[in-house]
Image 1 (cartoon, each protein chain N blue to C red):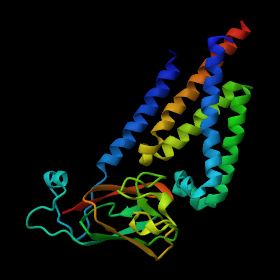
Image 2 (image 1 turned 90 degrees about the vertical axis):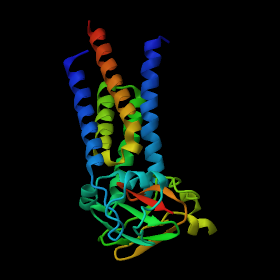
Image 3 (image 1 turned 120 degrees about the vertical axis):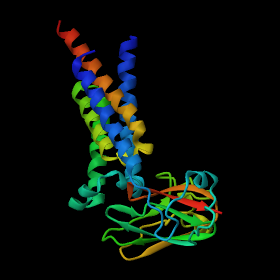
Image 4 (image 1 turned 135 degrees about the vertical axis):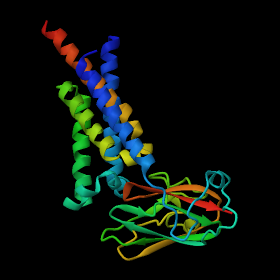
Length: 160
Length: 122
């Protein structure tokens, strides 16, 4: 094997490793009024920590930098509102791109049908200044993304 | 047909199929593909124009790979394209990790072609 080949593999490996580390190091921001420290135990059990309140309504801002906060916690039956504060359009939807099928019952194929309301999918561009909201009934940790910027992602933790 | 010739053919066919599928799917469902362009690029050029240009490039590259002519250059260009896609979408690695495999298939094709060309000259 030539030295050039080895170097190529090493460079690619390092780049991928760096990008993976960068994603891991990104601060996990809880919703503004949600508890400050969500213990790992409570995350694992999908249950809100004792004595601390979890919001029934959380707002996520969409900008050119992505979702802010990207990771939020909301009570089961609560609503997450995605507000577009960017000049460009955004399209929040359940992971995984492009099918949007991770959240139970969600699918991009349901857009434009009677089942669209049950789908965690804006089903179209949310224009600047507009918003999209979805009521989360399923307890769990649900990843989401911007369909128009596949690299912008986040997680919505739904707890009892 | 010798095994090595078959291997060359399958490598070219496999990589070309990926580019062809992506190009055709982009024309059919642009919004599902436009998200893979980096944001800074979309601020410089309209996203739909970028997508159509890139899809056309992918089709040309696919047919170039299938033709087998100057396969070293076609495979190198394919590898470079896939490398760019992976690097610009590292935050969507859950989706583009498959491209890493195709990237190395393109590198393998380029490497094998180069070796074959050297043998041919001897």
